[in-house]
Length: 167
Image 1: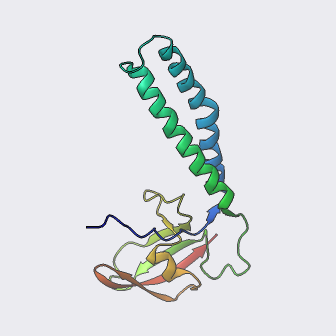
Image 2 (image 1 turned 90 degrees about the horizontal axis):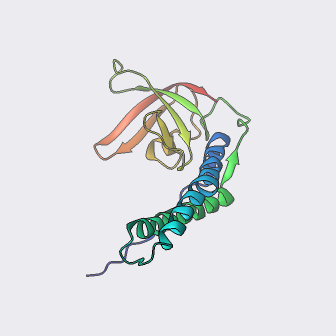
């Protein structure tokens, strides 16, 4: 039995200006605040002698590896990301960073949904921010107000009506 897994498809490189600022702030926090503190703990623990049974040393080194890995990942994402700061020319259509208000065409009595299309690093279900790569976002891209959108879900096709588009 093989353990091979095909690589995951690359996510879109887009990110909002606010999202990029949050990633930069996380890098700064990890590199300038947390890493020096953990380095100091590891340094003090190393002075105590036997490192093989020294919990502070072992867990400190592990935390340093986690911090370095996260900083490397975030730095690479920021280099590759395309920061979208401006509104599109045609604001009557759905594009990246749009707020879209949807009505469920199958159940008009259901409450309206308000979604924002953002990059994969900014997804937040509490704020209803969905990935630009999600099936819902792919169905919405390029559509206008009052268009009906078909979204393929595991349960089958669902239909939504676009009520409003904001940027």
